[in-house]
Length: 147
Image (tube, rainbow, N blue to C red):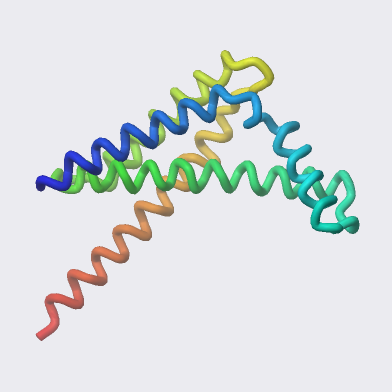
């Protein structure tokens, strides 16, 4: 129970990190695409054309959504673990924060917000992490119950 305050603090800090990255112009799609293109040139990988870079950019950016909000979901779960329905509460709070983040992003120059990011990537990342967490905890409980 006394570790709970650290999980709450970690959740708040992670939300602050998300908030800060939302404000950064370096987080735009074109910026990530340029960085990816420069990296491929540095690594002497010339076989990837502009359409390939666009696909890689999309995969990287959407994977970042899944992982970022999946991690937030885990931190929130650990903060709420003492409560009934902590998995659902953590998922709901993560989705609400993702919606507020997309809204915040709509005010940032050079950034676009998309509700699809929330419901296709952020919420699915949060759900997958909650599912994995549930399965791991369940497996540990079943293992401890065996004589």
